[in-house]
Length: 591
Image (cartoon, rainbow, N blue to C red; front, side):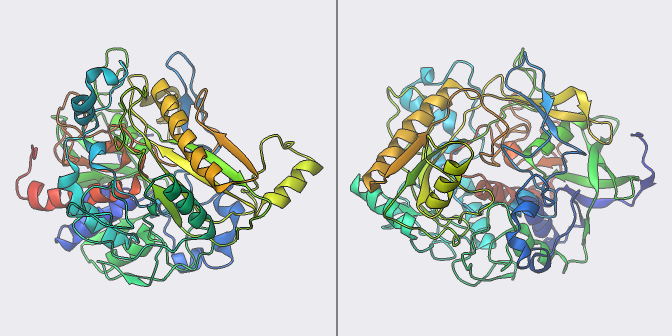
């Protein structure tokens, strides 16, 4: 890859790298404000009603198997993985533990639609926990920290995102007053959800009744699957979900799942001051002679040409891994060194700790061909710091839920423990229990640690000759203890439903990148109040290059238990306002 560009374009005011959940919102907000914006996306453009038309929307092999054409092409660029710093990292050749998108809309196209806000505690994890329990509660090598921004500051932007994405749910805390039927543990919200909650499914009703019998407060999981026809803040029309069952991992044939393609991207076409460039892979953020100011980006277009796009402001809004990698490739910020515990770029990678308790019945039948994005019921008693952690031996927690999302038959064929892994007995069990089972899941938080980080691999390179991202990560004792604790709680709820058989498995042993778990990867370009321990400040602005903003899951200093998309959307709305109302008027550091 040559360092000089084949083509140099005219300067623009803003260039946005990545058109997923965060990037699409920022492009829209800045374009509305009259700024000249170029959005660059390495994937192709899709049109929901054509590309996800029936029956193609239900094609599991196309969208969910290793051949998926809406996920990142791992033959061109992947990452390498190892559990510990003394191991050799090897390339990930197939999507397994997580699935990164590579189309306009990014991972937001195939997300499942769970739209929970992070809790107030999530943003002040370190200070609140130490104030309640003392400093010794955190493991010695834990590097979790406060975000530098609070829930109260972000609440209006959570609300803005929910009204862009038409989230359906029931408020549990309206301006400090607990509401019946909602989540009593959520942070105060300024108004009700824009759409009503989902109705209970059969599995959801069983879960809710059992949870209530044990003293819990179940609530409908907030969902991005439209519970009624809806017109959003950008005048985009979404249809009501028909519960077709192919949401997570798929696009929506009905334009009923809120994604960047259905909520934001179509409205960008109306702005003469916005230009979208697809099939263009940004490989570098360019800097001036001081190294403290970005001058634009260089990308490789579909014809293999290197193109330089000068810009006054560079906003990086791709996936968490790619955000950190682009900073490392561009020499922006100091790379993290786990030996000295200095530097911040690549620091505090965290994942999400999930476990499942599966119930099997002989006397109950469920419809696996119906389901929807986040069509479920949850409880929050064991989330964050909603319960007393004295003596439990860990920090953090989980929300517990059941989700009737449908059971695609190629991928989903659960059988009870002890069933042979193949042969006639397996076939008999798979057929028998296909519509006689559902799962209760615990979605747990993950703290950050000194030896969990991202850096550039010294050996493996991508198709352009650039170093791959290297991931070093394993389960920590804190997360294993947390998983065991909350999984037991989930199993108690399951037993009260009286299934004929029950499998319950907490996280144990080493983390494996092979089986799918969640696409909830965070960290690498984290937020904070101290430039020594964070990459961006509370406004998502790089400490070392004030005209560079980095927005996405990469900003999370550790991961909460709630799915990250709503928080990423809120950060995008917050950062857009910070640029419009702050940086544009007074260029320079905003803090």
